[in-house]
Image 1: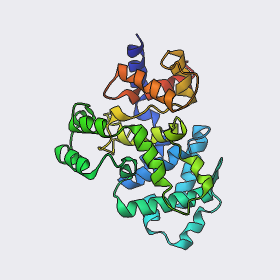
Image 2 (image 1 turned 90 degrees about the vertical axis):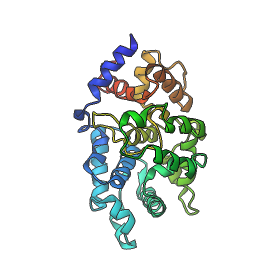
Image 3 (image 1 turned 60 degrees about the vertical axis):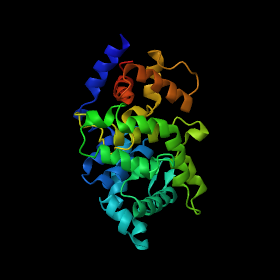
Amino acid sequence: MIKDFLDRKADEYNRPSFIENDPICIPHRFERKQDREIAAFFAAILAWGQRKTIINKCTELLARMDGTPFDFIRNHRETDLKSLLGFKHRTFNDTDLLYFVSFFRLHYERYNSLEDAFLPPSANPAFRAEYMEAYPVTAGAEEVTSPTCLLGRLAQSRFDMEEGLIHFRNYFFSQADYPLRTRKHISSPAQNSACKRLNMFLRWMVRRDERGVDFGLWHRIAPFQLICPCDVHVERVARKLGLIQRKQSDWKTACELTENLRVLDADDPVRYDFALFGLGVEGEM
């Protein structure tokens, strides 16, 4: 049975040993919430190519920020930005990096968490306050992740991740002087992109369990709302298992995969990302 097989594989790969050789090791180097958010975002956006190279480039980038990304973002002076010049990973360069830093600075002047950037207008402050009052951040994982809790009922009716991701891209590029070339680094369902890097980042921030790989830092987006990151390994294995029928590789494909995973686990479908990715990258399928 496919559920039993994927449950076993998710259990096998969703372990602390997964962290060391995956880009998620980058945010795991930090304790402060905002440091983890910033480090995770860069690690996800730069997740092109071999994992070892991605980890090395992220390490280089954070070193250019003196190893304290949140402090650098909030307190840098114009002269401090010289340390970022010359950074490059594939098509991501220092022009893009400088805009990312500018965005983060403006955002963190208004909000305490990057989670707010993914909450569209329909997830209004009244809704957020109602949820946080009912389920403070000390709530257990089983309360936060259950689709029957207040977050599940209201968030599902107010917005989904498609709306959240479209809102995020519009918000990210709301500064009038953004470089046109940088737009290619932030994907959106509005362009029918699978948004695999942003969905991976959201998995890291939202999912929570006792394994300690994903962070579960955010409480206003529920795990059942997430869309599975659909990279080449995940897609290949999912097709072999019949979880994807659609021929294209796009947003609708990622949604098709996620809907089929929700049949297996309605509360936390994206935990099967560990199984599908692990089976693909380890060459088991």
